[in-house]
Image (cartoon, rainbow, N blue to C red; front, side, top):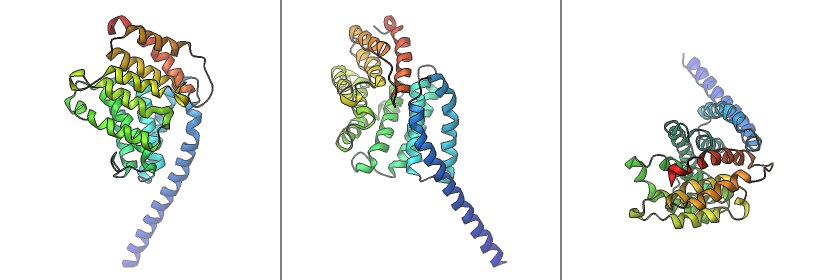
Length: 268
């Protein structure tokens, strides 16, 4: 009887090991294939195809829950999908996706915080903070979301210390969101927000149009500056399409800019 129990246990362990190995091999394929997704020029195609890939990541994580590369891809996937395709039409569903992305990034951080993060923690710290900032932006009526706003600044500053250019200078986008989301009475400053978004658009971030879109939607609206709002959105709409890793984000930004520009009279 004991021998049978031992054999059953060994078989179960072997099965777990095989599942984990298969998950790691598959997650490597997912990781290598993501640039092809970001290079797509058809947002609708990605909108329809990406949910199956997100579900696949979750299935793989069930077999390999500590896979940091997979956790990071899941965080980016859920956060990016919510921002690009959900929040304008279904903020409640987008909020769920942002929280999922934040949770996966939190698992990848493995206990590290903005105060203790090292270079290896920079990317999960970014997605954890970026998901949180985007969640806050569409949940400004929830006290529990607003209460966490002060956490954005130290995390973003840590990112600028560890890996300032990551994801097209997007640590500056986080700081821009931080200053734009906070009411003036709580220390918010549209002027500081604009300065951070301007920094995001320097160097490698110059052609990343989602940063320009966030600049218009957050800082220009918070400052009640219709000229800046219209200029930024017009620049996105008129930008020359370029192949590469920013193609999908820029095509999405163009679509979102057109819709947001139509709401100008409602916002100012």
